[in-house]
Structure formats: C-alpha cells, structure tokens
Image (cartoon, rainbow, N blue to C red; front, side, top):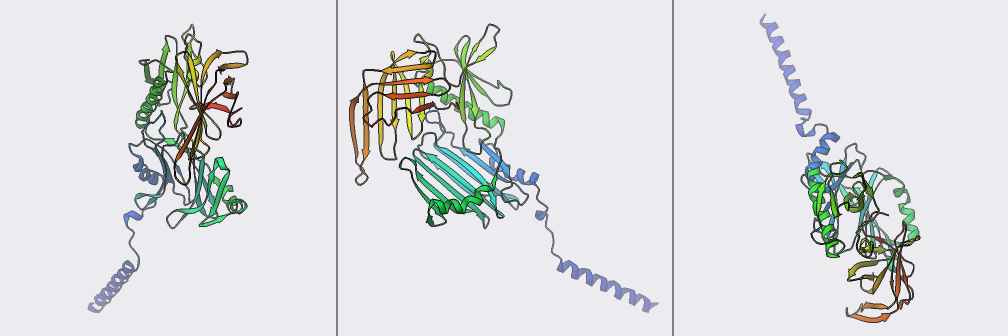
Length: 421
C-alpha cells in the first residue's frame, strides 16, 4: 500500500513540475495586449479633440485594419473676417493605449485666404500624405511617407507662381519635372478618399458665432450695412448648426451659413444668401452676396473684397456718392502695384447686373524692393479712367482705359470673397 501511495505521489509531483515548466516557457498575456478594434481606437483618438473646434476624419492610412485620425485645428483669431493666422493638420495613430502624433504641419503667417489641404495615398504597402500650402504667389507641396513609426519627408515641389519657377526634389536630390512625375506617378495613382466631419455641435456653434460676427463687423466697417443692424442666430435648416440672420428691412436681409464642412482641407468659412419675404411670408432667396437697398439702387451689395487669378484683389468701398475700387496686385513677395478709382454707379441693364465707371482718371502706385539693400522704391502717377462691370453668373470684369503696366489687369474677372459662384 505504501508503495502504491509513493508511486501516485511521484506521478503528481512530475505533473506539477511539467506545469511549472509550461508556465515558465509560455509568456504572460497582459491586459494591455487585448485585441485593438476600431471602436476602441477611435475612442482613444477622440480624446485629442475633446472640447476643441476642429475638422477631423478616421481613415486606415497604413492598411493595418485600425484607423488613424486626421485633424485640422484653427487659431480662432479673426482678421478681416477670416481665421487665417494659423491652421494646423495633425495625424494621430494609436500606440498602446495612447494616441501618438505621427505627422504635424502648420500654415502660419499674415496670408490672405491661403489654401491648406491634403491628399492621401497608399502604394506598395506604404502610406503617403501630400500637404499642399498655397498663398500669395507661392505654393509648396510636401509628400511624406510612413516609415519607422512616423511620417518622413519623401518629395516636394516649391513654386513661385508669378515667375512660373518650380523646384522639384526627391529626398535631398533636386530633379527635373519629368523625373519627379515619373517617380510619383504610381504613388499618386493610389489615392485614398474620405470626408471630414466637425467636432461637437456645441463647440462648432460657439466658433460659428465668432465667425459670423467677424463677417458682420467687417460689413459694418465697410459701410455695407448700418451700424446697429439687428442680427440673430438660429438653426434654420435643422442640421444642428447655427446660421446668422441679418435684418436689412422688415421683409429683407441675408443669412450666413457654414461652408467647407466635409473637405479634406482646412477650408471652413461662411457664405451669405440674400432673402426677401413674399406676401405669404415665405422666403425668396437671392444670390450669394450681400444685398442692400439704398437710394442709388443696390450698389452696396458689391462692397467688400474681390479676387482674381495671379494675386489680384479689389477692395470696393463707398465714400459719399462714389464707390472706390482699390485694385491691388502682388507679383511676388517683395513688390506690389495698386490702382485707385473713384467710380459712379451706373445701375443695371438687361445684360449686366451692375456697372461702375471712372472717367476722370485714377492713381497708380508701384512699389519695388531692392533685393540687395531691402530699400523700398515707390512711384505714383495719375492714370486714365476705368470701368468695372458685373455680368450675370460671373463677376467683375476690369477694363482699364489707360494702364501704365501694359494692360496687365484688362479682362480679369474678379469673384467676391466668400462666394462659391
């Protein structure tokens, strides 16, 4: 009996020994190694945008079946009704239980209505992102590749638009345009698509109030509407986002609404739509511009800033019975040209929405910066007249009757800032 008991004990000890060896050899599985899912990943990532106004999207950039998050954030500081002082794009990836920034790029500076957007690509089992930055005659297109846990510079182009001068590079090497396009063709063919969404409704509406108020203040400053004109906020279309109503009469006004909500870019702004109320109290919508009546007709709707290609701008303001057309041209970062015309509003016609004329002449000023000394050299002179006419569905066309710059602006069509038409 003792022998049998001894045999059973030996067998039991041997089993315990084997189990001990298994426990020693097999690694422990900590709780943190639990399988990551998109639901968990998105919850971790969204902590980075809590209580922040931003545009963001989830997308599986590296095809590992777990989403990354792309976020555009804004300064919240408005200059001339635009929030253009700083915009940042950040790409976050989940690492362990935290969200890690793997790419950050910013657009900073006193630029007027800059472009800042992205394209996403996946090629040969690698993720690529191209960041586009375009402002005041210059454009930069930087392509990054995801390697070693973060995005690294891969290729870029730098262009001085006015000089039609572009530098192409792959890595640290400058290449020709043909070499660049050949190297990037297959990458660009694998483009990924996605749409942005906005942060929490409460946060977005707080930002929209500031955005709309900045636009309203700018209109008052330019005498487009009278100081003290009533305005209010409401969710007119029921999408959860506020609109701003400005009452320019008992049965007229305009509505400001948000634009650029879903674009893969920093674009986010406001457009306006004029309205009148018919006999039944229903809204009759006009066109996308400020529209106000005055004793001279509807000329005030054309005040504000207008832009054309190649860095041309017009600021239209009212001074007494005249409308001032201040044309500005920036051929590069150092020089500028300006034309100022005091025009008369000639009204509308069957073919034209409006026309303005200056037959008495205006002034032309050019500013040249010496590249060696940094000295600014300015020259001013009187010039002949000009006409500006607005055609249906287009914009202002500038006809300069005596242009000392050689007709550089003749025929340009200017679109109103904030108008998508």
